[in-house]
Amino acid sequence: MKRTILLMIFFAFAVSAAQAQRGEVRRAERQLNRGALDAAKEHIDAATADESTKDDPDTWILKARVYMEIATSEEPEYQDLVDEPVVIADEAIIKAQDLGLNSIQEIQIQQILLVLSELVYNSGVEAFQAEQFVDASERFLRSYEILEPYGSVDTTTLYNAGLSSELAANYDEAKKIYQRLVDMDYDQPYLFTSLSNISMAQGDTVAALDYVMKGRKRYPEDLNIIFNEANIYIFTGQSEKAKDVLALAIEKDPDNHTLYFALAANFDRMVQDTTYTSEDREMFFAEAEKYYKQSIEKKPDYFDGIFNLGVLYFNKGIRIYEQADADLRRTQDFRQYEKDSEKFQAAWLQSQPYFEKAKELLPEDDPYYETLIISLVQLYARTGQNEELQEVQKIYHKLFGTEDEEVDID
Image 1 (cartoon, rainbow, N blue to C red):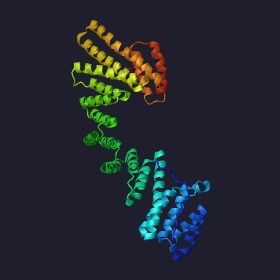
Image 2 (image 1 turned 90 degrees about the horizontal axis):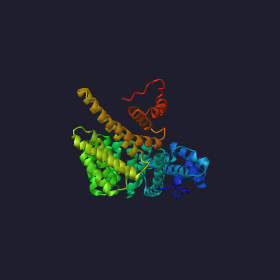
Image 3 (image 1 turned 135 degrees about the horizontal axis):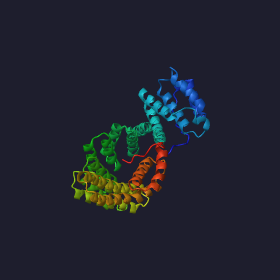
Image 4 (image 1 turned 180 degrees about the horizontal axis):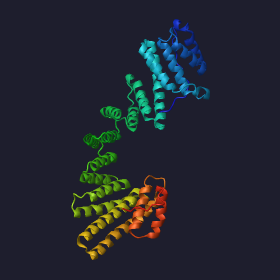
């Protein structure tokens, strides 16, 4: 990353006889050379407001120099002279250019712009770190454009402008910048995942997949692009395609626990899809179980894998219970219901160690903590574990402020 230049900037300026007679400009130049930036600022501000000097490009060039020095000063008394000195310096240069430059001034401007581009970039970094992404994008883009007329092509700065626009949810601007980089053959696979994500955010799944396919063609081994493709298939309900893509990703990165989790979650969705046969859904359940376990093997404290595996077992118990209840209402076969109850109780108990482990891992201020506590309440209530239920109900009531209410497990 570029770093701010903190050295005093000196330029040799040819001073015309006419300028020498303009008091405020002359005083500003003298105070600047002495390092008295407060006085230099006072005089140059007066000069840019004076009728005799405000239309002279040299006045605005000098103003840019003064404010650039303020921006890079390490002296506390100068650092607080003005807000956004880099922005003011940039505006001064634009004003000078608008007034028309002679050949000497053009050379002076070029020297200034080399440093100004750096300062504008650094102000973009500061805005980015403060999560002021709109400002960051504008400043990165301006830093790039300052030197573009002189043949400088800083693609990293342009990419930062696009990323900042994306984070600001200014998607049209982000796409425009990213597309410029694609056209420039910028070597960055994130371009394609970003363009795909933006298209998804705009509801255009066709464009999202098109960007992914272009990315896959250029970066066939990039896991982020492969994972993006799987997410699009999952979002659009193309579970079979998602399964194949995620399996490919695991082949390329067999130790990545999140890939096993994603594949498990995809099979988990297929378990819930009633358009598949019962036999297929049983097979999908076994696959989801296998890959959730593998995600935990790769990362034993992986909350998502642990909790989702518990949910997988618990939901299996719910499905068996609901079917058994419907069958009992229809046949009044209590013996069969007793047999079925053993199955759904066993499934619920199978979820217990995973829910309890997840509770150990999750801090109470986590957004998922409430969901986990509700799951435990339902588990203990359905399996008749009264002591455990009483303990977890205390947490439940504390979370939801329902001390005088009975917990509903349905």
